[in-house]
Amino acid sequence: MYSKAPYFKRYRTFLDYIYTEKKWDRLSELNQFINEYVAKDLLGISATFKNSNEFEVEGRKLDRLVNLLKKVSADVYVSGPSANNYIEVSKFEEAGIELVYKDYNSYPEYSQFYPPFDHYVSIFDLLFHTGLDASYFIWGWREDSRS
Image (cartoon, rainbow, N blue to C red; front, side):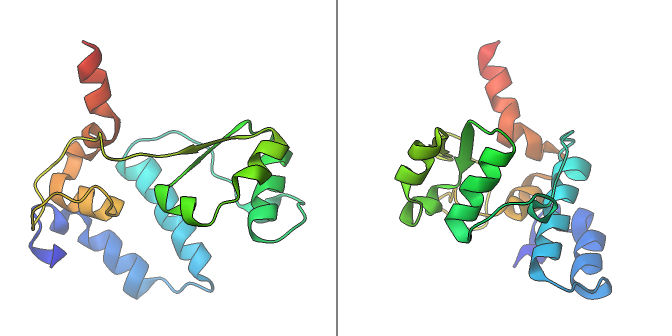
């Protein structure tokens, strides 16, 4: 389906590389590569990316996450809305970390294949439909509204 999206061809080489050329030992490696590439190379975000394995933290699942956040002195954790189904808010409260759920409903809509508009899609949906304008739909519209 996405092959018919207006900007799919712009990202085809990248997709071919990650899905057919490069071999991944772990799904997490693929996920980390995609996140960093999309953020830095496609959206122009200048950030430092770290692998959680670089930190000595104890625990499993949510406990490990909270311990990792404490290790880096985080005071806020921004989560996707679906995590509301399994995150135990009390663990963040006990650690003194503010838990914020991202709400995509106020983001501007763009042309998708099938109405009604779906805010809860992947970054690839946005890239394939808006191309180089993708960053506007993430944060640029906020800058416009301040003018």
